[in-house]
Image (cartoon, rainbow, N blue to C red):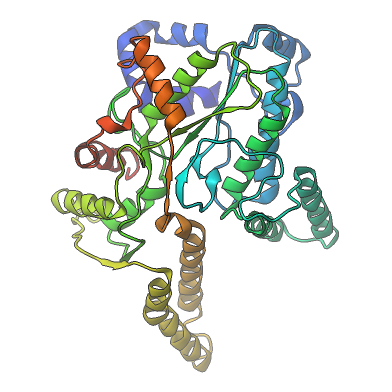
Length: 437
């Protein structure tokens, strides 16, 4: 309850409903919400109180699974446990709910990997891979993890060494079957399990693209944490970015958080008591109906932070301007070699000649460069992405909501977004307010 109150209810996100409810807010939350400690990596969602379990199975009629680890290079054992096996455990829980009306699972559009062209709203079949490699078996993936962990513990490996090996194992297994990172690989396997074990449960899967700050509700610009594109904005505004990497003509598929939530609620309403033989997929994004280019993001950032510069700890505004745009991975590697790697090698030689006098500086620079190269390895595929996400199912969902006269309540049409206005007056101010703090 302490975590629920401090990490959720205390957030500025709830400001509007608190203002509406006034002194009745606490009683409303107590009436509407029951907090249950659990763990979706376990059967029965880690709930050990048998009486509580029975009550939940008796009362719950809608299940929404948003639980995930979104780290691209998460430990493979952790990511498989949450994103893959967690999806199975939530489905098994839903099957035991006597009044179950609908299960909504939130995945990610990027289970598509690095596909090009129009990416359809189709479910994954068990064992399907992106590169045609055969032999993907989820039970075998679990076995590989267990055997590697057993081997490492027999060698008395440190927890840090185990963590690094598990991270590398996840990337290796993902790329063996055509996915660029552990996150999207384990989310894809989670979808496979849901599709193969669906039974007669009404199941919808929502695949958002890159989720950005709220467009309108509960107020514009709310965001929590640094998301994929926002890390670039933060680095640029603080004067830490010396270059941008990526094809300026790449479409960056963005969708505001409140539109994702509205699409989720619309999907739940539409699929209540409507079982199907396979999950219905809803890709929620903007790349087909209202695309925004990577070059536009660079322009928005430059305009905004030129007009509203970030003020550093010493009270000085940080000046920003045009920076180098590297359009290929080859140009990036050349840039890094000339600007950082060659000087680093020179420092290494000087350090050896001066009896490790510059040892601390050398190792600090080496660590930073290694981190940058790791991040580029993980995020690079999205900076040159050549796919757009079909949203025909989502468009049909919008039509159903319109027919019910509820499009003003459950709005999620990206065509209404003016990206220039959104970035300059909503998203970037929101980043400054909620992330820069």
